[in-house]
Amino acid sequence: MVKETSWTSRLFDIFNIIVLAIIALITIVPFIYVVAGSFATQRELLEKGFILFPTEFSLEAYNYIFSTNTLMRSLGVTIFITVVGTLINITLTCLMAYPLSRRDMDFRSPIQLMVIFTMLFSGGMIPTFLVVKELGMLDTYWSLLLPGAISAFNLIIVRSFFQQLPPDLEESAKIDGASDPGILVRIVIPLSLPVLATFSLFYAVGHWNTYFSSILYINDSTKWPIQVLLRQIVMLSQGGSLGDTSSLESNFIPPDQAVKMAVIVVSTIPILIVYPFLQKHFAKGALLGSVKG
Amino acid sequence: MGNPLAASKPSISAVFRRQKLKRLARNRWLYIMLLPGLLYFITFKYVPMYGVLLAFKNYQPFLGFVDSEWVGMKHFDRFFGDPLFWKLLKNTFVLAAYNILFFFPLPIVLALMLNELRSQTYKKTIQTLVYIPHFMSWVVIVSIAYLFFTTEGGLVNEAIASVGGEKIQFLLSPGWFRTFITGEVMWKETGWGTIIFLAALAGVDTQLYEAAKIDGAGRMRQLWHITLPAIRSTIVILLILRLGNFLDTGFEQIFLMLNPLNREVGEVFDTYVYTTGISQGEYSYSTAVGLFKSVVGLVLVFGSNFLAKRFGEEGIL
Image (cartoon, rainbow over all chains, first blue to last red; front, side, top):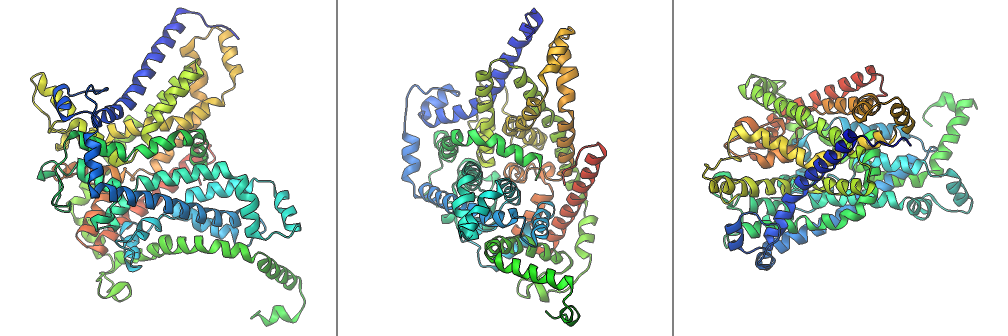
């Protein structure tokens, strides 16, 4: 190693460290402010404006939001579609990825081509909406679970992963009399657990954050996921000019700052909980995804 | 089976076919496993593609898809003749250009800065923090922006008011719309965008740096002559990819930021399809608009792929 000790080099390092710290702060402080604000009293929020540590710690906002049916129901809907949706996603993805990873299967490349083509061209919002409508899925949770059941992108990556497992394992299992589903369940899946865990988490985050498909397919406000409710509470409850609030229940009290912040926190917390588990793997997953399908 | 010629003589092709049938039978479980996925792609991807024909019909819900009458290019004529078309095109282009101009270089700069850090712990910490917003939904991001910038108790406006300034209608004025859209993307995705560049940087041969140091090159010269050339191809590929998705301005985000007062600059193809199709029920017309967007998008993807190959990269398809 050639040591670098020149003062310009040192100065560069110090400057770099400081600028990066500032960038990290800009990224994270708005969210910390929201978390802190959700625990603050309305009075302190109004007086100080900006707090990162509330002096008067209060659970008022949380007490309020958890006492309303609306929020609990939406939270329930979101938990349900996240759990069931992710199960559907990962099951269907594995079921389809495995046959496509088998070189001895016929029609492999036309099917793959068919999958890849959906990444380039789509019928668009309205024809898809009409299909969901014709299937009678409007205002049902199926409309949030099925239209995105497989991500073509993830499917191709999982297939590539399955493909690079040593084929000898499957061969010997076959000789021992295992069927194809048996091989998938007892050999391929256990060997791919880290990859499948990563994709499950990606799918789960997608379901937790789902917003637009609920706007499209769900009119019934009792079936709204938490993200839709969040938008109603934070963005549409201030002044009539921003939109229509009539769809909210009439006894809903117009929330104050702390309540809005508490709803933001509740709709993000699960992500922050899974984040550390996710972080170990996602760099690899994201790379696989962005480099080549 | 239905071909008497092939069956009458035991040719090589017949042997092949019998083998193929055998293989099909042996692999029957594989086909059964494929079935749910195939059904999914057909129902939710390929039926809608066929449904695109609605753009050339006059869809009447009570008549159904098949019985609605054909109207040819009527909806396209209407769309291209509408002054709104140019407005949508302009809004989409300006937002996309903002994205490339202001957002695109940021992850590269951030990745280069992270790469220069000597402490791996510090690097990991910064990375952990800047990745977080990527996992938040657009609703959360836009909600936080509201809390900061609304005139009703928003932090920024309260600060402006407390020093005697006049509150600014950030969220309602068309003048601020594009700034907000681009700013939010920067806040949410810059950190995440560094992943691919950091991976490219990790592949640089460290001997090159050693040699440069011995030749007396300072930090800036190393950056300029070694690091940047090393990630040049990644930058070019990503830029080209971005051009391929030029029309895909973040739909959810724009939808969430739109309001009657900034619609003038904020309406893009996707949001227009939503308002005319879903809200106003003009299914055929909005399908035509959507089809226009899909086709242009497809041309852009193939065009950019061609470009990528021209640049000597292996392309993206």
